[in-house]
Figure 1 (cartoon, rainbow, N blue to C red):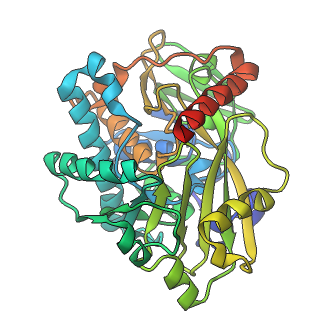
Figure 2: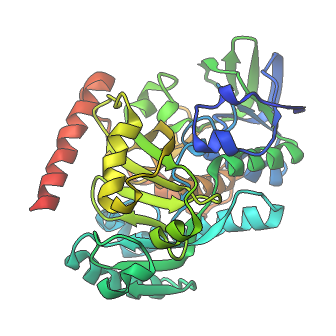
Length: 435
């Protein structure tokens, strides 16, 4: 059971989210031996939501977290809850067929609804605000938004969609950098760390046993899996690996299929009401369409949170604020005098084909996994939890099989060379973008 004393703030990486998170209980480290139906490694969104889905279906579940709830990308991301899962899913039509691709797209819409329902049903306090805008960097991108609206309507998308012409852009964003926009009132933004903490509390109420500061030191495979930590072990019929970019060497096969890439965010001081309204008149989450994406939004206390600049080289900038501030000022030069109060980094997990990797290990069929969300993890993790819950309890036709059919290549060069090789690949995409 959780202890009632709040965790000290230094157990979370310094960030705006850590500084503004709600009080929450901590969970003891694993000591001794425990037997459950399912053991989950990782207490981010993937692990927590898989645990919730399984507990609601009547299974006993233990979650092992190396640090603390939401320590990784789940507690450090941009907080943008955006429709869709994967990138350019049409590429999978030769493998999955037209109907399979259509199902992937529909699941990308349903994923946001899973988050919506979880928050609303259980009254999770996480500053949820509806409204998002895709920002076109070129006229061609803006023209493509009309086709996207047509496709979304064909998928049965019920939320308000609105094309924003260049002349109308000042009603959406205080920047002259863009060629138009697409507003989607079915997507939005929130405080991700507070959401993770709320979902952990929900899981605990459902009977899930959560253990923090319990890094896994080894896994013994067999008909039952034994997961070992420094002070204890968990024996379970099923294991779920939900570590994403922080899998490290826990499973070399899965680790080779994911690239941990650095992402960076800054948050300004609280902006005056008039400045905040000028920067973001409708308080939307926003994201541009470049390969090296910029994304930004206002927080509940009217700070501009600005992120992006994903690094594939494996080297983080020494001063994140100094690195990110010029990028922010290209979009919002009116914030020249705004102080930067918070700066932080984190790792996101990227696969070669940019589709989330959800499946089970061929050599160990009682080991399931979910990873590689490529920066769209807030909704995709919740979808992964639903699909894993269905698959582990024997429910067929829920979408798990569709994801599991997609092969994922191992990055060449091992963990030391795959980052530089992908950095070269991304440079090629940026050059094509400029051309």
